[in-house]
Image (tube, rainbow, N blue to C red):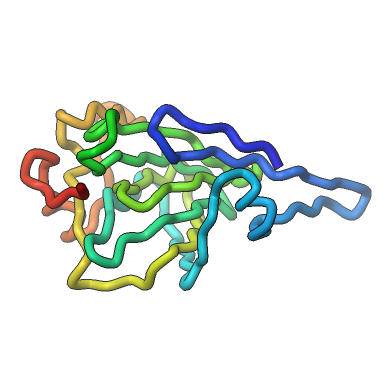
Length: 182
């Protein structure tokens, strides 16, 4: 497994070793010892899969009190994946970072606790799998505005095309108004 630290402290892009032969391929998606040796110590309590059509934007989500770390992987299709550092103690507080995750490359993104996370589906029938370190808690859930100019996110949407959003995601708060972490 190869890990690549990203520009936001604690965020890591993970490339597993893929073993291929005439039958297809195999890789370890999660191995507690291997990940811990790379600095990612996590205990996952829930695993989720979302299915989205092209230009569905989910996020930017996070939880307070029951803060979640997330291990994100694309099973089908591709996403423009975005994280935002919401830790006031971080030198990169309020900064965003994006990566493209594609099912054709078995990379994963480690999103540490204290970050907002979201993605834009780049193809129909996009399937995203993510393991989380704490249970989903509706009272703890928060949404950051996907289009807040302060975040500087350049979503790859065609001209004159808006994202498909849930009501919750439409009502996201700007960073200046959002509940953040110490």
